[in-house]
Amino acid sequence: MVDEATKLSLAKIPLLKTKAGPRDGELWISRLKEEYQALIKYVQNNKEADNDWFRLESNKEGTRWFGKCWYIHELLKYEFDVEFDIPVTYPTTSPEIALPELDGKTAKMYRGGKICLTDHFKPLWARNVPKFGIAHAMALGLGPWLAVEIPDLIQRGVVTHQEKKDSGAAS
Amino acid sequence: MASPTVAELQQTIEKLREELKNEKQKIEEIKGTTKRTRITQMSSEVVDSNPYSRLMALKRMGIVDDYEKIRDFSIAVVGVGGVGSVTAEMLTRCGIGKLLLFDYDKVELANMNRLFYQPHQAGLSKVEAAEKTLREINPDVEFEVYNYNITTMDNFNHFMDRIRLGGKVKDTPVDLVLSCVDNFEARMAINTACNELGQSWFESGVSENAVSGHIQFVIPGDTSCFACAPPLVVATQTDEKTLKREGVCAASLPTTMAVVAGFLVQNVLKYLLHFGQVSYYLGYNALQDFFPTMRMKPNPHCDDTHCLRQQRLFQEREAAKPKQEFTEETEEEVVHDENEWKIELVSETTEDEAKAAEGDKPQLTEGVTVAYTKPAAQAEDSTDFVNATEMSIDDLMSQMKQL
Image (cartoon, rainbow over all chains, first blue to last red; front, side):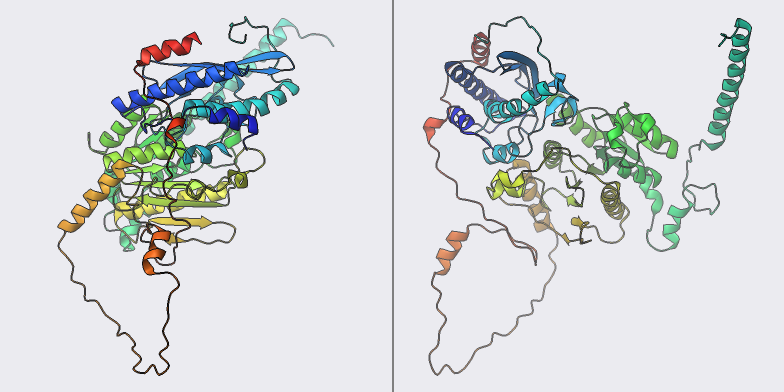
């Protein structure tokens, strides 16, 4: 289920054109450019809406992505490392976003800290191949997951607030 | 209570040392007597010590012509969980020539409701634990094990190479790939690899509620590949809300998994050793004990370009085969000579209209109907898409970093 706020922010993310995965040579370069463009636009949108919540970067080939995401709960900021690989069958299959440090702390995760998305996300993704990209996966997958899971994890005492150096990103 | 003296403690240590020595010796003895040595030639001799006597008896029963041939085959098992581990064990016990095992998971206590793995193996990688057990069961089998995720770029290329070159004879392809994985991404990766290589493979699966399963035999170009029929929710645009279920942990039963593994290996044996009929699709509904079978043709509009290429190649091979003569039996049409009242049946829609509304329909086997026809492609508003850019990847990467 996608709430209205997610729908609205989703509509503002540009769609992608090139159907290509990391094994498709030049076409992948085009796709990767589109991915970055969509991501940059999404982060800019988030900043404008005062809802900045993640940063991502990739290796040179664009096959491995890593960064940080954060969630504000009762005025405290909780930050987590994010990572995922682009599967060879991308974009037919979506990336499997992982938060390794939460591995084993919630049932809503697969091995290695991959967040569980199956219920709503995968059908939605599959219907929108190749228009959806990493930005959409973040907006539709990780965003709602954090919103549901993090408050629960905090309440259960599994995740506690740590004073981290302000990365300057959460201005 | 008085604490024991040093002398007493020394005595205890000495006693324990002795006990340990005895236990160690016992283990060595068991190992020495029960460890089975390699056998160079499969024998039909009926003696208690021959591990192959019951299998070789298949020849005398008239089921298999040449059972020894099983040693020439090499099989890749992708995923050695609930289904894959049992599959690998069955093949090992059957004396298969070579097994290649792929999995990146570790053995966990949560796996103990299924067969094969034992609690003391918790923490080991599944392929490592499986290889050790299987070697002890049958040292005649050759093993290659890979503890990695096949869907990532680096591993996928290596995975393809092992399918292409992992046969019993060096640098020949494996004879079959068996998919025993538990997710869509890995199945699609196997499908991609096998379509590219023209490699025959079996898909297998058990539903998340543990009460149904299936196996499917994919011969690229000849039968439906895994991408030929997209999941129903995708194709029918079903509201994903209908899929909602509480919790995310999949259920599993050792029974369903073993049944599916049994079906899988049974069909592998039939295919390799040429006996009986191989099922192209075999379903298992445990609640009703219903086992539907069918053969699915490939989808001429499949999303996978290599599937389409394999379909063309298959058509060419079929066309090159000598034609079989068919004598068609035509039933004579019933014509009524009289129609006194000039009664006619008139359709409200013309045939053309009906066809246009239905769209392309695949050819299906008897008793099977399409659940949907593909919705017409919708025109997209181009303003919703990313614009063409002059910037290079590096520029974009640094722009992203500066945000």
